[in-house]
Image (cartoon, rainbow, N blue to C red):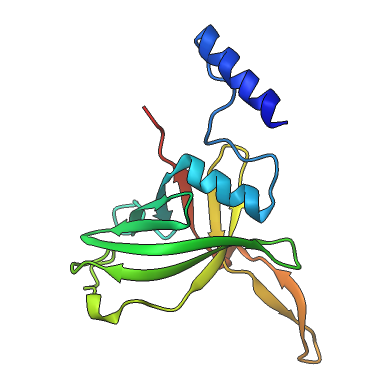
Length: 172
């Protein structure tokens, strides 16, 4: 498979066209393929779904993923270095796990000041749902609670559980 993709890409270069955009959704949605895709694209633009009074996203950030599991997030004046990994859970959700390691001083995209002394922080994660155009929705699915109050392993995803978009930054 890799050989045929490489051959298609090489043919695209020779013919002056690209075979498939790097930013397109990966056909394989395993945790390993998701990690490879995030690193292959490298730099992503995050935009919160919540809009400010001006109609624009209340927060935009630049996220960068390197293949070695390190990366950074630029949020306003704050830059956070991090480690990252992906996993697929029993519900087939694809999780992105981030561990903030260090931060610069400065306000984030919401105007909140950062405290570099508070780092490193605990790992946290969320589900990444890729769309065919290559962008992805960031969400935190909720556990399903039965009528009798029992919490099941089943997950549900409501619109309000999704707070932002990741869009690949186009390479020149």
